[in-house]
Length: 174
Image 1: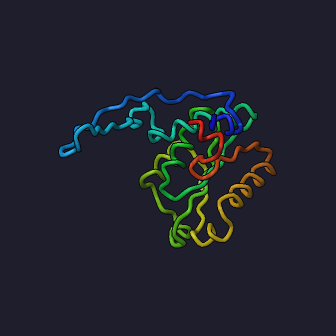
Image 2: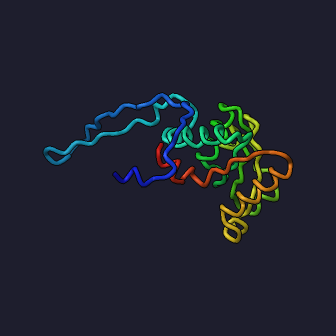
C-alpha cells in the first residue's frame, strides 16, 4: 500500500544491470542460535555503475529519455560514486553528463587531475564543474543544479536534473 503513495509510478525502465542479484548467507562466528546474516550482492549487478546505484538510475535515465532530454545534470562530492555512476549510465543511454562536483577551494582553483572517479568521468567525456564547499552551502544543490540546467537550456539543450544521490520519488523505485 505504501508504494501506491510514491509518485510518479515509473512507466519505463532503461535496463542496465543484471538483476536480481543474489543473496549470500554470511556464516559469522558467535551468532546467537537461530540468527542468520544474509548479504544482498549488489556488487554483482554486472556493470560499472556502483552496485545498487544502477537500480535507481534505470528509472531516472528512462524518464530522461522519455522526456526527450539530451543530457543529464547531477551533483555530488568530488569522488561521488553516484556522479560516476550517473555519467556512465548517461553514456550507455546516449546522453551527455554534466556533473557539479563539490570540493575544497584549493581544488576548485587548480585541476584536481585524473584520480579515482574523476578519471572515469573524464574518460567517458562528462562535463565537470567544480564548486567549493562554501559555495555549495551558500546556494545548495537544488539551486546549483537548476542554474546549470538554465545555462544548458540557453544553449538549446534539454537537460534532465537528477538530484544528489538520485534520491527522489522516482529513484526510490530502484
